Amino acid sequence: MFKSIFQDVHGMKLPAGIGSLKNLLSLTAIHAGGGIAEELGNLIQLGRLGVMDVAEENISELFVSIKKMPALPSLSLELNMHSTRETLSSWIHSHLHHFFKSFA
Image 1 (tube, one colour):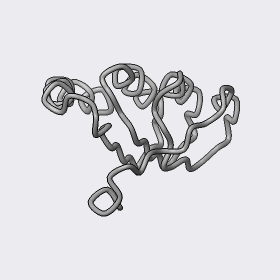
Image 2: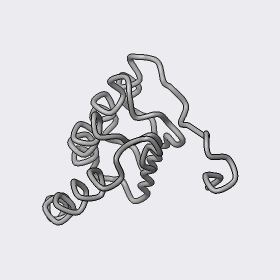
Image 3: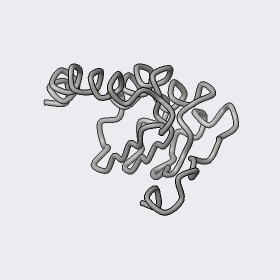
Image 4: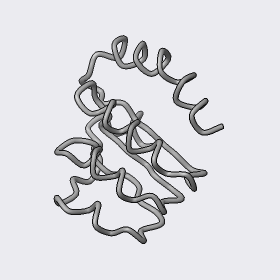
């Protein structure tokens, strides 16, 4: 939301073990790195997820985790400004069809 004004806004870095909060319903403005993308797969009750700093090194794990969340009506992803946008965009476009088809 503030990316155009503040170019260096990043998501909050969460401690390891966040995946143990199984009844968490909302988690936004978080950093995708540090193994957090994989831990999110344990939070299957989430109804709202907002992830910032999505980069090439964590996007695969992030999508695997998101597919485990059946009750996720609100999803926001922000790409890392320093990642290769072309590579991430290409990866996202090539996997989006398969990704959303898995929810059907």
